[in-house]
Amino acid sequence: MHLGPLQKVRLHYRPLVANMLKHLSKVRLKPVSSEKEAHSSVKYLFPKTAHQVSCRLVQEEREACSALKVGVFFSGGQAAGGHNVIAGLFDALKQIHTHSELVGFLEGPIGVLENRRKILGEDAIAPYRNQGGFDLIGSGRLKIETKEQFAKALQNTQDLDGIVVIGGDDSNTNAALMAEFFAAHGSKTKVVGVPKTIDGDLRSEDIEMSFGFDSACKTYAELIGNIAKDALSAKKYYHFIKLMGRSASHITLECALQTQPNLALIGEERKSLAEIVDEIVDLVKKRKEAGKEYGVILVPEGLIEFIPEIEQLIQELNQLLAKSEPISHLTPASAAIFADLPEKIQKQLTMQRDSHGNVQVSMIETELLLIEKVKKKCPHLQVVQHFLGYEGRSCLPSNFDANYSYALGLFSALCIRDQLTGVIGSIQHLRGSVDAWHFKAVPISRLMHFEMRQGKEKPVIQKTLVDMNQSSYIEFSRKRVSWQLQDQYISPGPIQFFGDPELTDSVPVTL
Ligand code: FBP
Image (cartoon, rainbow, N blue to C red; front, side):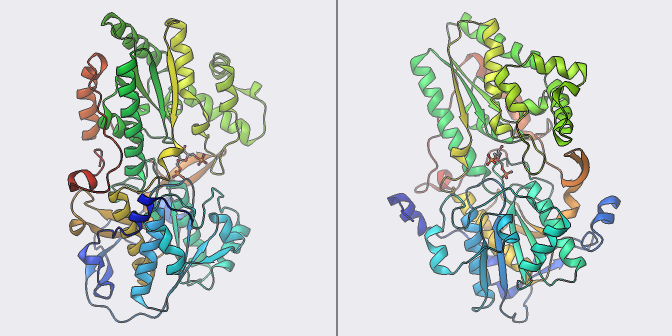
């Protein structure tokens, strides 16, 4: 692996570790006494694992433990900090017992099905400490879903005490299904999930944030700030910037608060296409009257799925595609909406779904849809189209993500040591110093609800959307009016690794 000067320096960064996680033989996971029951239909689907309650990490001396053999794989999109989960997991296993072993499954869940492994010793891990990407073992989006696949996964992990799944909502749903299958077949292999996704939608009362969100938002905010400075200097273009985030608009909200653009659309406001277009046209006209023919507009990737009429269209398309039926079977209302979309968008909406049945919104040029509609009303508008997505997923992790993901790795080793399965690592009080963090293992089945996927109702972890009552959204709503005409752009600059802790250790505004 070739490393540049900054990458080499980052290898030596020592993630901040909570005192609680420094001496692992002095802590153990203990059940939380009062917790509400899991949903009855979820309990029905997870008879072996849904009865569990969350466990909190408490200080208590523990008897010595024998060596553990643990597997790990990445699932889904990249998120900065992934390598630190592996480093934390490895360091914890070695502390638990010097003969413990860690193996990585290659290219995500498919590596488990094909039993493609890599031994992860210190030599293999060392060049990846505090580095971005998932390239140490790779990742993939395959979903383990048939009985045969679960049986294969069971067979290929029989020699392991546990397996750690580093993934988002769909991958952790899968981890819960795998844990249930393994338990039902009397396997000793425990399954533990780690909350990963730049999208920031794997949130709940217990999971404050997934790792990767902070680094991605800081990267996008740097670029948005640069673009805004350019717009302010050249004064000739409207920049339409689409930001990644498959469904929820958390990334857009965070970046808006960090950079103060003229307009940031939030999908969860559920405006119709006509309302959104009118809002942009209105902004353009007002700014023109003020002598400003430039601007910066943020468009969340998932916006398209929140536009009520298009949401309905997508649902119908999903069902038709799942049954390989033609588009001519759309209802008249959806057919009319489809016909009114630019041809490029029509094609993108009918592209193959991902393995979890989701529309691949990163491939849909929602910003182009808006540009085309706005240009019909403002033909002289000069626009530049941007998409900020992949450039934020594999950057060097910020200190926050480096520390957080390392702690998640350490903690997942403890979950396996303490024989928990079908749980996800939860760290609370993330805004405080690492010593204020609280560690909890939460049964994944408790985060689930039922959703239509590929034409069928399935149990999945509910995505958490931007809530109109959350304080960061209220702050955004209060500020955004003045951003429209007065240019209050902020250019936050690149992620900082050296100097004032206020800069190096800052946490997401929306946390
Ligand atoms: P995860 O939920 O797997 O973390 O991935 C999120 C994401 O980065 C979305 O923001 C984006 O829409 C999608 O992945 C892109 O998927 P792909 O990497 O398959 O192009």
